[in-house]
View 1 (cartoon, helix red, strand yellow):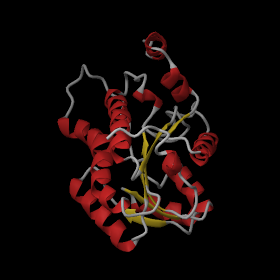
View 2 (cartoon, one colour):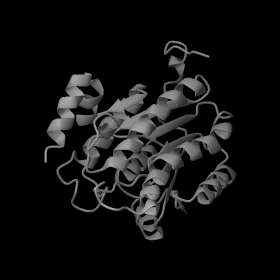
View 3 (cartoon, one colour):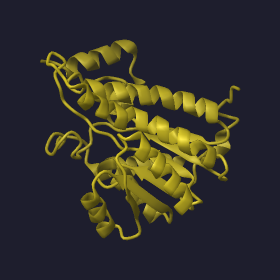
Length: 255
């Protein structure tokens, strides 16, 4: 069933009073979003692969609830969803943020297990968790799924081919998810530009947009009711023509 934006405008997400699960929430963009949701009076749960990083996040934000979960593993996704619903029956917002980025040469012999881990965390996990949790979210008064994609969904960085491809897929999936779930669940996409985090490894994104600058801008757009949030490069790439995107790709990927 087609639902125009005018039919579902009332779903514009309120910022407070939610119970929010943020995947990959112990650091980077996930932590910054968790911090802002918590400051607005929401209950916030974060998950991540490393207990030490989760402890560090709790030390900085004592109000956080945490869960160790490796989202590359389908069984751990199932366990995470079941645990979250049982422990937090009011859960009504899923933020699919967890992701890894690997720089690699497609001219080299690559191990499939290594490639699949990136696919599993970046693409399979958001789709799987959404599938697991949407039946519960639909019971809530004002639920939402927030998928974190990337400006690279529009213009890929050739040295990160798997990451770029997964983010393009997440962008496509989010469009379909929004169409199918309207008006029951609001579906929001956040497409960051390069942000100064440790994504891909320490020191690789120090030239990117400062984390707090991006998180403040993204949260302001979320507050305003935007369902397609972008900033800087990602906004430029999203708005570019096909020719403009080709020029951006050539410029960004010069040898």
